[in-house]
Image (cartoon, rainbow, N blue to C red; front, side, top):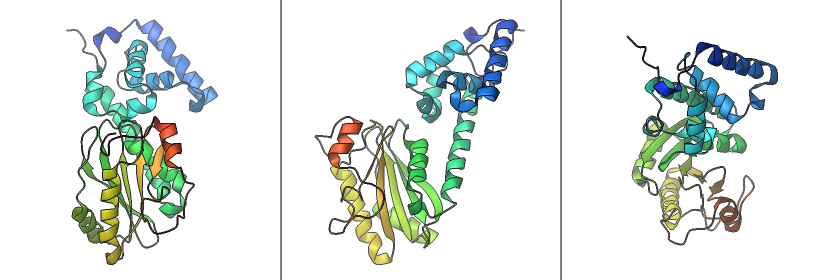
Amino acid sequence: MPTQPLGLPAVARDSPTSYWRHRERLRQCLMAAGAENLPDYELLELMLFASNPRAKVEILVKELLERFGSLAEVLGADTQELAAAGLGLPAIAVIKFIRELLLRFLRAELRKRPVVGSWDKLIDYCTAHIGYSAVEEFHILFLDCKNALIRDERQQRGTVDHTPVYTREVIKRALDLGASALILVHNHPSGDPTPSAADIAVTKDIVRIAEPLGITVHDHLIIGRGCHASLRDLGLLWPNRGRTGPPSYSPGDISGRAGGAREAPNSR
């Protein structure tokens, strides 16, 4: 009986001599030059080799990068998107495995010191986690009295331009975990992190209920594609307070980096 491919299309198979020689060359480059010196397409080839040792993957890798745009977006794609691109379950499992390793590494880095003192690491973690998601996700980082991370939880998963947020559920969960502070995080799949009127309103609503209970809302971060917005830095978290913390961006800076401000409050 013919052997079925393990995670890659049948058309991706080739003669043993060529693919073993190519694979060995990539491994030698990885060890000699370091992974940081390999282009995205070669790193993706090495990942897919793990799902099918007998597959020739160069054509598939090219198609994946053309479809998603970058290695980061391939790693951020969900199972349905990867399957639609032609990957089988073994290949998808390898991609999900590597992504989870990356997230656990970044999360471990956050736990080494107070989160509010590790702003660059926080942004890296949030970007890797939800920055390339095709739909909006609303996450909350629950912190203890020393601003150490207790948990990162996804509260809601929405559509391409909307995520429902239930303020009382947010506060209830914070009380259940004994959290002293929160950092709100959600993504804009469009890539533009400019906050909408709805983003601002729900943030102020959470702050209004949390403060009398002794729970501090440090910030609401909106993650775009390679950029982000901080409602605290924009003066939209506490309207009557001064800003402290990481460097700020003006609304013009954000729209200039992320492709333009929004005209409609809920448009993203």
